[in-house]
Length: 114
Length: 112
Image (spheres, each protein chain N blue to C red):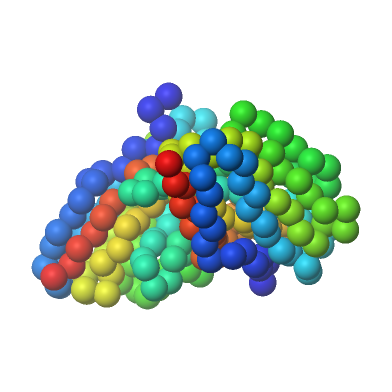
């Protein structure tokens, strides 16, 4: 298995632009997570899905952030409009049984908003 | 709030054992202890987890105190590749299945 695949690896954009991050989970995993990591705040859980349904989005910072999972093999995290404070590394992870089983993380997308 | 307490940083010499402590004094009966680590420029990776008894796998051992208020992750022979941030996390098996909350972890440095 190729593991969790995220794209792009790096994204540089200007303030106000729309940014879309993509994630392909491990086949057969029913849970998908989006995390954000910054030096100041560490790893933060943004949202997670179970069977393509968003279960808890309380970590999404504001309405500029949205996440979708149209099918079991694909998820997106969108930021519109982007701001410099959104600069961070965004990780996607998947698992069989939520946090009860090991989460498998992708290599992340490093987002820089200028 | 499922918190744990870990030292900010630790140092080890290559090929020596490393004991990474974690305090979880308010742990409940349905909380498991999970450990993850994050190598530089990578996403976190699962290491090990346990409930009451000690656990071993190919990566590490987990020693859980009898009162479950603390635990220790043991790397039997540290290598340079083990330099990473190690996270000790309480996971409540009776609650939300998405509740994997990372703290600040322990940054382990390994000297050759």
